[in-house]
Amino acid sequence: MTNPSSIANRIPFGRNRASVTSVAARVAWVLVIGVFLCFFAVPIVWLLLAPTRSDTGIVHGAPLTFGSLDDLAASWQHLYDFQSHAIVTWIGNSALYSFSALAITLVTAVPAGYALATTQFRGRIALLTVTLLVMLMPNATLVLPLYLEMDALGLAGSRLSAILPLSFFPFGVYLTYIYYTTTVSGDLLDAARIDGASEWTVFRRIALPLARPVVALVAFFSFVHSWNNFFLPFVMLPDSEQYPAQVGLNSLLTTSPMFNSSSGISEILRPELALAALLTSVPVLIVFLFSQRALVSGMTAGATKE
Image 1: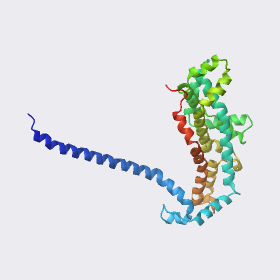
Image 2: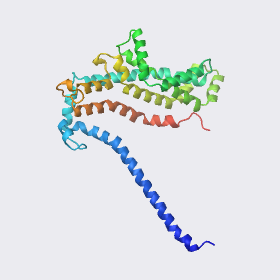
Image 3: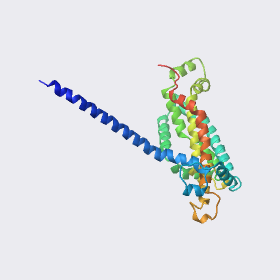
Image 4: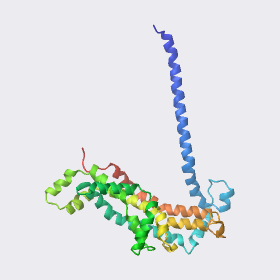
């Protein structure tokens, strides 16, 4: 027989062991969060504070301290005066390229995804496969053939050479295809066809209103993809007046003596570079804040309830 006293003696040991395990798990969780904060949060905080300080203060002062509004105004003035207000031109170019590509993407990607999801035709599976493969390919691999194509059309060096390739967004097509195949009821669309509605009427009056969440998703991802694209405009556009913000940031880096010792004397130092990075990130943040409700609904909305 088992001695009851021995069982009683084991209970506190088991509880202590469980408490030790719980403490160890909490310590490990705190360590993981601390590592993430060091690698992600600290650089962002530094970036937010750097424009408020002088370059000397950034180098020799405490890294995470607020400077002054006067230093912030001086950083903005130096950045604004660079190449006759080039930062404003670059941000305007990014807005032009991103919103133009966004409009073309919505006009092409959403109907294409709808057609792939709701119609049967020869080569449909092959087209879906090609769309998926192109979506998975790195953007850098497509730059050379796209440049040769734009050059053959006589568009190399023009603004269209940056807009049209950015409008080619296979991820938007595939996202729309997945949404229509998994969320929108085919019976609902068939009922409209039985009532005599044409395919265009079914898409415009029924399928498109139901797809507002996925349209918002495609619009957001297309805008972010176009705004953050660097390599394609860098190759396509030879004139600095046509540069988007991301390529403009590269120009700032090359004129700064910290990154290019042969650039000579330049007003673009660490505070101006940090301020330029923040300014080029603000539009994406604004778009996200205004579209986050639509982004959430894009993940949860459905056309019918089971």
